[in-house]
Length: 415
Image (cartoon, rainbow, N blue to C red; front, side, top):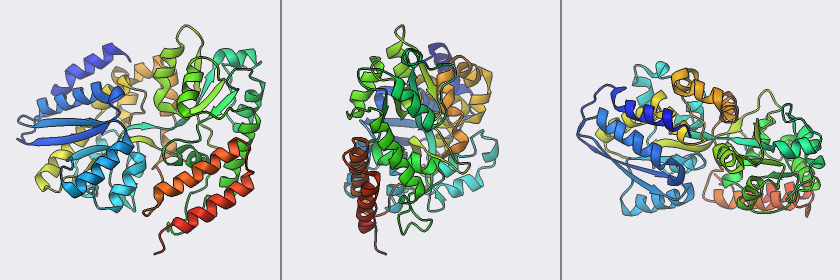
């Protein structure tokens, strides 16, 4: 993190926004405090300073899954937060259960919406069934990390890394490392990286009417064949945490996982080996990448608090607040204004090129797909088990796809 820019923006936040009178408390829930606590507190204090009489009550839980369980219990027993930074993979769930407020009316009546400086893809990320339920705050996408020393030792050029899966695999086979030439994180929440492979190739997980699966087409088979090739290239089956530790220790050559850990890996490898970040391949002109990370959702049913919540959303996603968030984490900001301004993130990214790489793919990002119905989590587990079977070479892509497709189809809603 650049502490200089972080502190400068943090100090300036309260005076960068017009005063808004509202004597209300706003209960705000978020997760992943190990990385987001500092920017959340800065943003909350800035909002309070520019909105006299308003108190932001911040609460946090460990992760997105824990937050979802807490929210579902609170929906029954009471105590729902007014606003929550929900994991993008769970937006569908809250929308389907009518536990979140659509934001389209706020957007339509926002006089300055087009001039707020957001990237064009942000409403698509939070759109469920044609309505906008979430405004992204901190985004991540799958990305490719290379150990520069191991690449060079294998005869590769760290300054001219492969951009396609064929090229990446060719290099991975040449890398000699204790924990393997490559590790593909196949087991993140909600089949995230499998969805990325399918969508990047131009495919979809389900038909447009969300009645039938569609991942069993060519794009899905290509994804499974890629995982098979990664297994044949020597990938060792370990947990994602073990793989991250191995990469940070210098014993994996190529790691495919979330962009949210760029700064962490860079710090862990500092002085021992260079890390180069490269784009996740998107072979199709129609290709898209699912947005990980979190988005702001409004849960309060109180009309007055909804208006205040909307003001908080705009504040948290402003160019200044996004600069606070992005310089404290490795998440992708959703403010184009911040990225383009040299005084905000422009110069910062010019000096931190690894962090800039995921930002350059913002135009290719869309929402995080999730299966409809009560069996969504069960379906993702079925798929994850088959992905593991393929990458460990225990099952052929063809057999795995048959199992995935038939079991997923059987668990979809029947209406």
